[in-house]
Image (cartoon, rainbow, N blue to C red; front, side):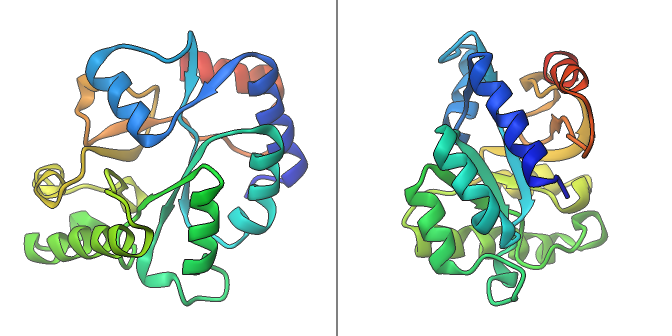
Length: 199
């Protein structure tokens, strides 16, 4: 939903202002040890695994040397508007992390524990197997979680989980229920900076 020119302008602003862009593994270390690889850090996350993340996003990320994380809906990989496995592999080799957004994008708070577990486990196994990695992070569809979702995600092998709750992430809210800052189109760079610094 972000216009490409505005997206590039925002990423250029991060680079010009000495922001370090985290990988999921680095985000985990920051949240568990409070040790930062740089004074100013940000974890860039994109949900759903849309094909434009590859067609539009990858050239921008590569040009600016920016790390980002795409949360992929693994059951959508054959859809025409979604990233396929070859594109996911190319993104990964270009420093774009691929993490889980479940298999089918059903809101987990509407599912029983067994169905939630399948969504969590099967998506992780898909990415682990196809991308030869240990998938440690999940973005919960629409940010929705049931009372047992965090525990089920932990049992499935995830170390981090992100919601759509507005605010800066910190370990105090739980590593599997992290806040995020939504960046909407057509905000000024001043508003962008304010969101980065204050949530």
